[in-house]
Length: 99
Image (cartoon, rainbow, N blue to C red):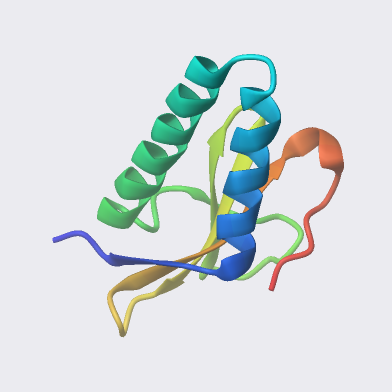
């Protein structure tokens, strides 16, 4: 059974910003990327510990799914059977500020 997906406001804003930026040049590509990111998150909810830990945090519960060049950073709460999407970050922007 998949874990519940809970989005932080920051992650929602991250995704909106990414999609809006790409849509300036190619709305179809922006929509496809959004779908791929959401699909990657859904996959993470099915196997939340299958992705690597975030090196900058070093905590077992803070994980990231990679969809190059994006890092989808989430917190796993096994007791609540939930993953909390914290950030969706373009790798060229350096190290993300994680809530």
